[in-house]
Length: 116
Image (cartoon, one colour):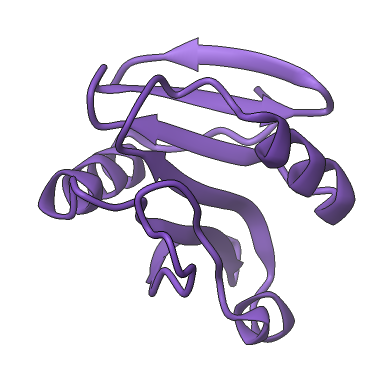
């Protein structure tokens, strides 16, 4: 995994998702002065159970390294939409499943599954 994500950030993400388990949460992992930080974002999608949308200003105003969201209705496997968006943005997608309590990192057309 080229983007080493700390356990504390993974815990922040899973806790955020568990607090909002009826909708997809979203956020970004950014680099601030060499330190990685998770920023929670508001999900702007109309159907928050099946989709997520992040305000484009988040990408413009931050050094985004990873896009984060949860799947509240299924596994952490990336959907075809997730893959397409990650490829278009040229950013890894980190997906957390609130049902399976695990993560999936989609990066460079490969998938890595793991638990915290």
